[in-house]
Length: 114
Length: 117
Length: 242
Image (cartoon, rainbow over all chains, first blue to last red; front, side):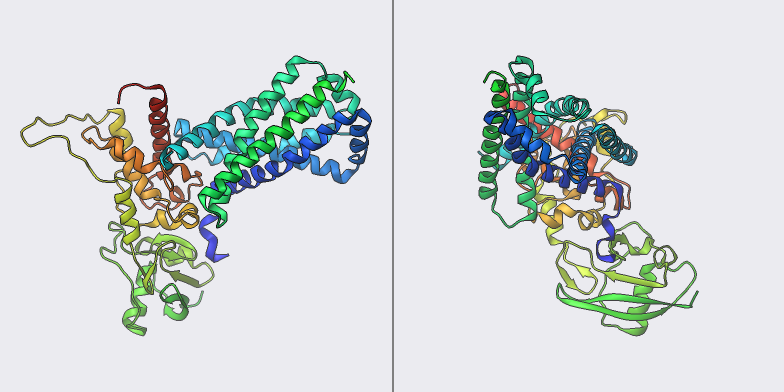
């Protein structure tokens, strides 16, 4: 779209990914802690929930979460490198590498999850 | 506290907690990938962390770091993308920090004690 | 390829609309040539700014097909790939009329960021010797070519989202002065650039770097300010000189 053409470059998309992944992870956290906390009520209660998650859709969602976490990590590393080492060289390669690493981590998770 | 002091200190804490989380997340991701092989079960999770001081310490550090990191990030998003005033987003940030600490430690301590029941 | 281009030009103030014109194509035509043609041959009421028309002053900066650029250095062939052009005033600034925007806020923020020199010597003192390979001099050199054209300000999303954000140009200027060993205003300057709307609001999206016609990296300068602010804060906590 013409009105937002100025945003069409690597670092902008890296920023969007970092912000969206951060927000989604922040929303996911209370849910994650709640589920783990089910262990207080006994192993059976936690197992009950875990068996519910034994579907392809949930496994895919979990893979997405892993990708988001890895992407937020690599995006954060990019940011800290820029801020602390003031890398002048175009770190667009870093953006590509970071995204690639995040996807690879997600793939490894997907291949291992049962 | 002046806005200069607030903004600068939040920036520093965000980076410090990020550095800690960088290590925690790498360990956590490796652990999760190994854990999901051959399926996930409560017994396996509890068997690993229950009564284990090392995991208790690791996840305690993890929870504290995330309780600092996530609310600061959410505050920035709210400041930029909503009409909430800075005084309001500050409160949201503090509340979120408490929520993460409470629920996080409830889970960590709960799992630590689970096998002992 | 047809021998005219269809140009959509913004008319009005912040409220307004696009008006279409057909302009004859010429070889090596720039967008500034196109706007000038419209004003001289079709509609004399079109308002726009330019001065040097050779890419030195920055006055002709406008939004061309969504991106902020110097119109005198934008060849029509490069941007009107489908024979159409859309020209509007720079984003993030109030519109005076048509393609001319009000740069007041831009320069006010330059002041607010203490982007001005604080002298420490008189004519009776000896010169300060600053060698070209001095690390601070090199840092300053990376940012001093800024001519205040406003393109980075128009390209920055944080400027759009945070009305208080000082912006890439003002912060870049502040950084060049932080590195000026002759300047005595650093305490106020660091404070000026690290509050609400200061350097910490930058998320390194680098829209500024992407669009700066002088190839300056305000992001790099702002990163320097972040480090300087953190050092200052830590000194304050742990005590220490200055």
